[in-house]
Amino acid sequence: MKVLVVGAGAVGGYFGGRLLEKGIDVTFLVREGRRKQLEETGLVIESIHGNVTLSPKTILAGEETSPFDLIILSTKAYHLEGAIESFRQYVSKETAILPLLNGMLHFDKLAVQFGEERVIGGLCFIESTLDMDGRVIQTSPKHDLVFGERSGERTERIVKIEEAFNGTKIGYRLSDNINQDLWNKYLFISTMSGITTLMRSPIGPIREELNGRVAIVKLLEEIVAVMKRVGAPLPENIPTLQMIQIDSLAYPMKSSMQRDMEKLFQVEADHLHGYLVEIAKKEMISAPVLEVVYANLKVYEKQLS
Image (cartoon, rainbow, N blue to C red; front, side, top):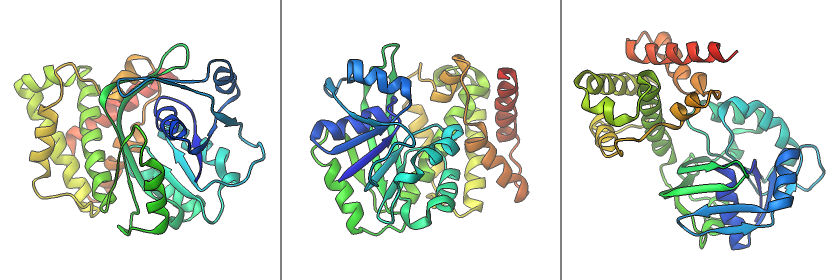
C-alpha cells in the first residue's frame, strides 16, 4: 500500500511514522522548512510506546509523483482548504482519503471535492506535540486510531488498510459503526473544549464547582439535542456516558483548544461549535450555553487579528 500523510506534525508524524516503522511505503507532504528539518534530523518519535528515528520520503505540493492508495489527512480545520489543494493531484479513482479531523463538517467539504465514495471515516485519540526541534513527543498510553467505511461495510479497501496498520505500534481499530464513533467523539470534544475555553480552566476545578458542573451538564444536553435533530446515531443514555468519561479525566486535564488559546494560536470555533450553533438556530433549538461558548471563541479570534 502506498500512503501519503499530509503533514508531518504531532498527529500525522506519529501515525505516519509508525506505518513507516513497520515498512509501509509512506510519503509525507510537507512544507519546505519541515522538509529541511526532516532531512537534517530524520523523523524523531519519542513515545512511551517506543522511540524511533526514521528517514522519511517527502514531497512538496506540486511535485510530480504517482497517485496514492491512501491519504491520511490530519490538519486543523482552518487549514483544510489549503490542504485539499496541496494533495488534489495525488488522488486517483482508487484513492481512499482518511481524515482525522474533529467534527463532521469536513466530510461534506471532502465529498464535494473528491466524491463521497473516496472519503472514509476516521478519528484518533492521542496526546502528542512537536517540540522546538521538530520531534514528535507522545507521552500518554492512548495513541488510538479508529477508521471504517461510513456505510458500515467491510470493503476490500478497508480490509487492506487494516492490514497496513496490523503489526504497527498503534492502537488501531476497524469500526463497523464509524458514524456513531465520530458523533460520540464530536460530542465529547465540543463539550470539553467548549467548557474549558469558556472557563479558562482545566476540567478538574470546573467539575468541583457546583455551578461549573451544572454548566457542563447543560452544555452537554444542548449539544446532544442539536446532534439528535440532524439524526446523529447517539444512544439514549449518552449524556450519562459522557459525564462518566468527563469525570474520569485527570484533574489538570486541558482541552487541546484551550492549550491553543493559551499559546495565542488559531482555534476551530466555526468547524466545531459554530456548526452546531448554526443547526440550533435553523431548527429553533434553545442552546444558550453553546451560544455563549461560541461567542467566547469568536471574541478570542477577533483579538488575534
